[in-house]
Image (cartoon, rainbow, N blue to C red):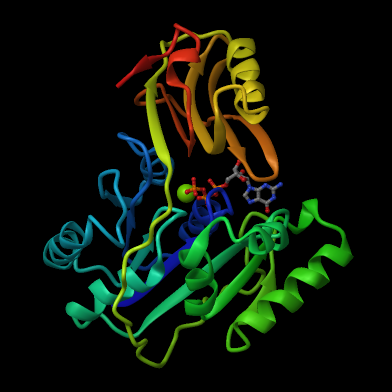
Length: 292
Ligand SMILES: Nc1nc2c(ncn2[C@@H]2O[C@H](COP(=O)(O)OP(=O)(O)OP(=O)(O)O)[C@@H](O)[C@H]2O)c(=O)[nH]1
Ligand SMILES: [Mg+2]
């Protein structure tokens, strides 16, 4: 079985990359996703393509969910025995913790793909706010995709490339938009990765999982996301929603580069919003949202 871990910061483009990979491969693939929030949104997005998706509950796959990760991996092998296993840990997970779990089950070699958001990487690196797991994602990667190049100028792309090369001279660097690789081939690592004892990461943040009523005005969600971006409800690092609005089903995303709002191509299973951040002020959120 080929195993690929797709890591990268919150909103960098991990799910977009996996969606594209799934659309062009015919091998028997299972995706294991560990999204934040009580009911993960990425699981619904990825399974919409008809792919086998297994979700790990909210929590950090590299720390508190280590045991769950191992038992879930065993279940995947037993029940599906896929040719390719793709793992998307949450954006604040350290891939070393996942490599450790794979090591325990002798699922090596593993290929690690790191997705880099070119619109924020230089600043995030300089601020050091994301601590060790952020660098771990870059250092552990075999392939680094410098993503969202449609939103960056040549100078930013060059500086990001140089910084990444300094941190991990071993990795292959490729610029992408929406994680789309021009070449069909996803490189496969030939060497086993050592899994250093992972001390867990201490990235303080909170998650809010909220239920949205069906048929909500689109304009309400537009304003809500603008307010989340402006910091009206605390420091928001990532927010995403799937909502059946008065204009039809929509997906809303707040990620480092800004807000995206696109029609969702099929009916939504559960209308919801998840927010990850620091100092979130749930009591100030509009009353039309319900905690789940
Ligand atoms: N303009 C632009 N937008 C992108 C690109 N890649 C991803 N996005 C958008 O960025 C947002 C986040 O993308 P995702 O693929 O969900 O990112 P992710 O890393 O899986 O996010 P989390 O799992 O929540 O950490 C979505 O609105 C995407 O459509 C890109 O290359 N260019
Ligand atoms: Mg994702």
